[in-house]
Image (cartoon, rainbow over all chains, first blue to last red; front, side, top):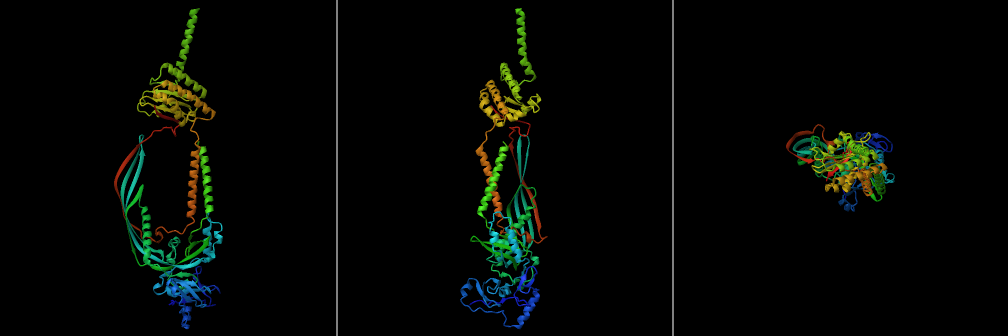
Length: 362
Length: 251
């Protein structure tokens, strides 16, 4: 039996076209008539409309039964309230676009009740700025194939709210280290080396908040970490209105699964901070380290990310931009020919220089 | 008449005998305190040395001692050369060969232009090939003779502009150039490649640490023990950094 899911959308009170959330204005914008609306205002408008139309577009039941196979693979169908077309989406989809009429469609059921996020960090950057950031990333890369930047279909950049777990925790680390201090001196007959051995004891504590870990199976964890940091002071209470005009997914990775990585990051931070407490030693080697991390319940939030999947010579390259800060990362293809050319050029140049130096030193 | 001629001849002979002695007293080139040579041998070597001095504007000194009494032989030779005022020209150019019989050490110190005429390579080759074999058998006169004869060749080569020195090792030079070139090339490529992949894990969680919450609870450094090792210094064998050059060894 196909799933019953409600599909929301936000319509412009003026012209009835679809409203999308604008990162620049931090409001809902109508792309047709150009008006901006505060989220609260539109919410009230929608509620009023819903009261009038009891049999509203909230509950549209899909009738197809052949979808049961897909459903078991994590897919469901929804019906678009605008055009009535069937939207096939993943079970995790919380916001998407109707493939027929391109209206933003929000699957309310995936972000309500137990699945309701604790908050959302709205988009602060625009698609144009994301496209510009991509071009910037491609600049100054000597090994990049010439045609990559122009051939990449950067207009395909998508704004996605990626589900994240944000961990608050208190950490404490106790460490024992073996350290040496080496002194050398000479007199007229000998060179002396004196090695002194020490045991160092250190213990430190600190608290952390909002350490992010992406809660989406399909999102690459390294990519999501690479666009950090996210500044959670700009997060707001969740409202489906923010999702309008963007893609969004609900979480499919449990909070517990991220605890290992969080622990590792906290431990690394303590290692770094304690480095500055070692003065004047030649070598410092840890002999024993104990790390304690006390978690409080992880918060579930949707964070803004611009994503671009682009194909070049039959390989897919993924780029991600932090929708709040604009930081962009990704993996660029390497032109082997250019690489060898640079290697050859630099090697030859240096070899010539070294030969010259050797001649002059004779 | 015959008596007068005889007296005249005696006077001339006597006078001619004093001349080398006179020259030796003022600036003796061969000083044999270890008594390795006969007087005749000393005279012979002295005149050979004098010839070299006047031909090449390079002072040539040979010194033998029984012992340096604890002083380092290189320093002894340097001090002797300078104290006695050897050296030709403003740079005090010259070469001194010194033998110390106590430990059978030899040393050659070079000064001024002598440094360029006698490279370490040149000195070692000269001693190894032409001088040390004789010294080892206690044939000191033969050794010194050979030394002075070869000095002639060295000075001459230097005057020509081709001082006797290590031959150019082309294969080694090429190896070094290619090796360094390849290394720098690899490093450059690796740096460029790393800039192409920016989707990497973060290190630590410093950005998320609550400011002011970091506290160092315990900080103790405990001293355990020490040990000291020493390595004997190898003394200066090239006079690098000082205004003289040379080489040394044993016979």
